[in-house]
Length: 293
Ligand SMILES: [Zn+2]
Ligand SMILES: [Zn+2]
Image 1: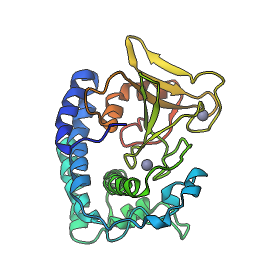
Image 2: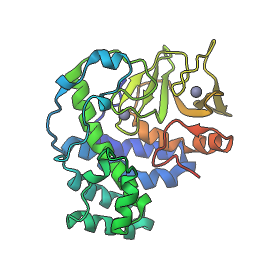
Image 3: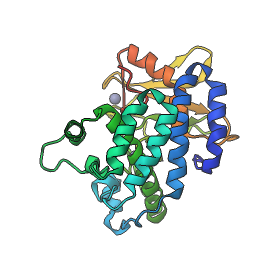
Image 4: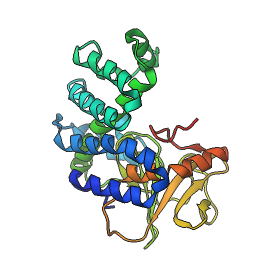
């Protein structure tokens, strides 16, 4: 799948998205500076080389993602720099939350808030690290977790790329992400040959999914998967599962003319999220743009 492109290409990808889905221009414009900055940071940051000897391909084959075999975010990762850089991009795209973002940035800059604390596994059973921290520091928990999920994407995407390069090919048959274990935010079907790829917005990974079943609950489909289409827009659909009541926005790609960014595509198809959620279905994963209620 050819979703890799130079980060300088992102401006053109966003321009095409605005052209193709003008009805969603507001949300595309809000996320545009954030995604552009994320892609740039993925290329620029320096991370410790991952120790891929920790990863067992047999476990992958059995459905154990990399995130269950090694830590994907480390305390020495440049989380502070990434967070401050992304905070500036968030303010550009979403000026209405500028004040809250400034407050969070100040705490990070002064060392009162360590972004890594958001990513520590709640091993002590206390859970809800974000809620607790936000309360202590008196910042908006939703804005803090929004910023931290943007930070985590940058580190995870870079690490995922390095792991995939070091690991080489491996078998993966699950509907959740082989790297971070999250469920997909969007699927892409190549019209020629019908190959289906799933995309993880939490780490940016794409993987081929060949099984004829629901990626979420694995309910087998007898013949074909069930899709919901919007009139006059044959390239945009949503897979729906009548067992788990989840949906997955799905895009049909005719050619390979233009570079594509699957997150920009997912954001451009947010009308499908509105439609499916109004019908009572839930997304397979919560993203910063598809939590509508
Ligand atoms: Zn992932
Ligand atoms: Zn299902």
